[in-house]
Length: 171
Image (cartoon, rainbow, N blue to C red; front, top):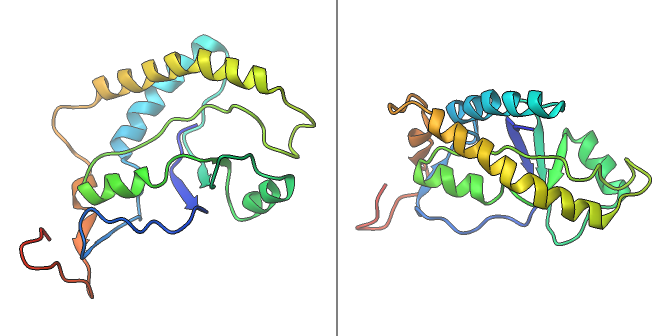
């Protein structure tokens, strides 16, 4: 799954790499990197007889626990398609420094209340098996990116309308 957007349900992110700046989240994930991940993931999925999706809203929650069935249902009603404990604050930090960022995620379990039961040992085995393969997808996608940057990721950080950097700090 290659999400196109996210909802953050973790405690407020307070650390700023660039005080006085605001970051645009209109397009939180790099479109060029998402496209490269999509193309490589499709080839990977075809070889594995599995599916890949290039649009999803990622709901980020606080760990280290799994969600309750009621939380899963509430997150789905709010628009979350997938739930995990990753993506934030990484997406914020990438935007603050003008870096391209995207994520490709594999489904490990179907969340509490979606499937009657799941096996933690099976979950561990899926992670061990899939980590290397998913890492290969990511590396192939990075290698497929053009040398010339065409996205606008570097321009998502701007000096805020009410925030002014302190003397000597970059805007």
